[in-house]
Image 1 (cartoon, rainbow, N blue to C red):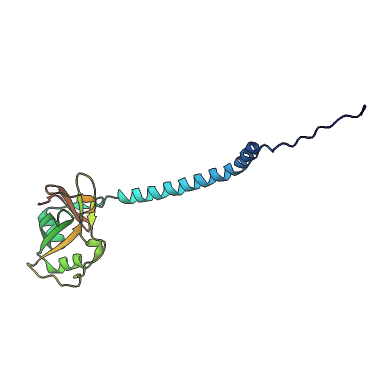
Image 2 (cartoon, rainbow, N blue to C red; image 1 turned 90 degrees about the horizontal axis):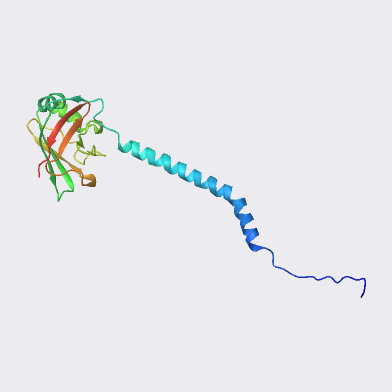
Length: 175
């Protein structure tokens, strides 16, 4: 056996950790791209929701007195109160001009919106109530019930009432 070299053959396991790290390196750009995409979509969605939440309907409106609101829209606000264990806002009004008041009641764009002056939270009807086809009568007292979203309104809160292009500030909520 002289002159012959003995060859030693050993069987070794392939380096598993090196294979995994190579796979991770090949996969990491795609993971990073997917993560950036998800964050971008989430950021845009959050911005849209936040921007929609912060729109102030008081912008572009004219400040009026109680008499001014009655003259423009034919209603005299008689009560804004928290009811139903704080879950609803009772908005009551008396009709002083049926023609103008009927325009308000039959047009969702003119429905009263209540803004909490401390927080800017807005409460509004999102659809016509089931009695929207009623014709309002002179001297009649009517009401809306609005959900008290996020428990935003409490007895003693000051609200701004917005109807169309007019606003009535510092309406105090009854308990």
